[in-house]
Each structure stands twice: as structure tokens, then as C-alpha cells.
Image (cartoon, rainbow, N blue to C red; front, side, top):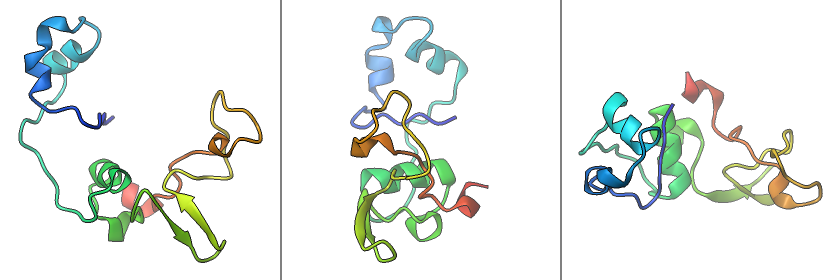
Length: 112
């Protein structure tokens, strides 16, 4: 499992440690892996590209996530990196565009 929190600096874990409860971030600090100086090289540096690189260990050219959204030539539409018409968002309401979300845009071979 990987957890990514946008705009959460690594030093916040220690800086605010006294405010964390035992079942949350404090548990991650005590039982998980914490990297204070980890990075991976990929471009572009959009959120979706970074998350896909982090979770798959591959670059956008390998995992297929080339931006937060892009133009899909087959459908002729602009799609988001989490669009998937084959699934329904838990708690979503039918008819709303955000009801269809998943990570199937990531190429399966990249996730092995």
C-alpha cells in the first residue's frame, strides 16, 4: 500500500508528531517505512503522473499516465487519468460525470 498526500512535506511527520493519534500517522511513523529524501525522475510533473510513477515504479511512457487529463484519439474526447466507464464510484449518483472513476488508465503491465 502506498499513501500520497499532496502538499504534505516530509518534515511535517516529525514536526506535528505530538498531535497525531496512535492509530494514524503515528502508527505509520512507528510501524511503516518513512523516506525523508526519496525521489523518482519523471516528466511531466503533474499529480497523476507522479502518483502513477510512485505506485508502478515506471515512467509515464511505460505506465500510460501522461497527464492529469489528455485527448483520447479513439473516443475523440478529453478524459481524466481516473476515468473508467466500466465502474461506478461508491456513493456516487448516476448521471454525474464523477460517478465513473477508477485507475484502469494505468497500463496493466506497468503494475506487475
